[in-house]
Image (tube, rainbow, N blue to C red; front, side, top):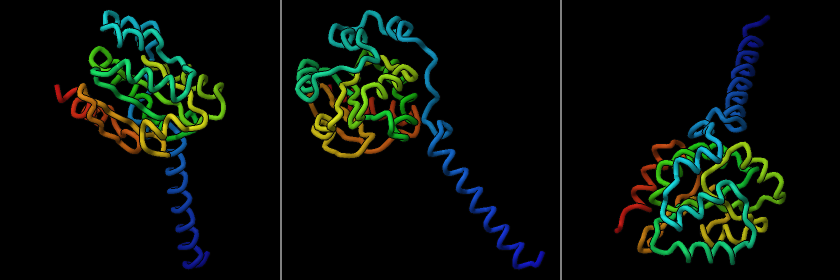
Length: 198
């Protein structure tokens, strides 16, 4: 083979290798912030047993997909006024959302006695797809089913997914656009934006 053909073949092989690595990181869990927790819902509830009433009611609904849309979500947030809140907007089809779910599993257990965690399943056309995802990635808090995306847009002020909203005891908000790359980064933002300020 001529040197020119060898260099073209090498270049093509390099491009293909980069493409395969990139697709693996996008499509797989290899780039996830944390692997999914192996805890069952019962084990999660047991770890959070004895939480204050508003938080305990969330833990009782662990991994449930609640109806009622924007009105139900508004009502829940109003009932949690004065409690630090973390709201994560996600969808089962969203690759970055799937990658960060392991971090939310772990952090919601670590801080679930001090902060209210809620999910908004925004833009999933199929309730079945969302429920199947939650069965494989259980969390210690419920999510509100938001197929039209209205609740997710209002709460996060964004059409993008994932988005996480932090609200402290006084109601001050911080909005994080995009996925969390690590458990440590999510923990730091929970401490900084939800648990500070009183």
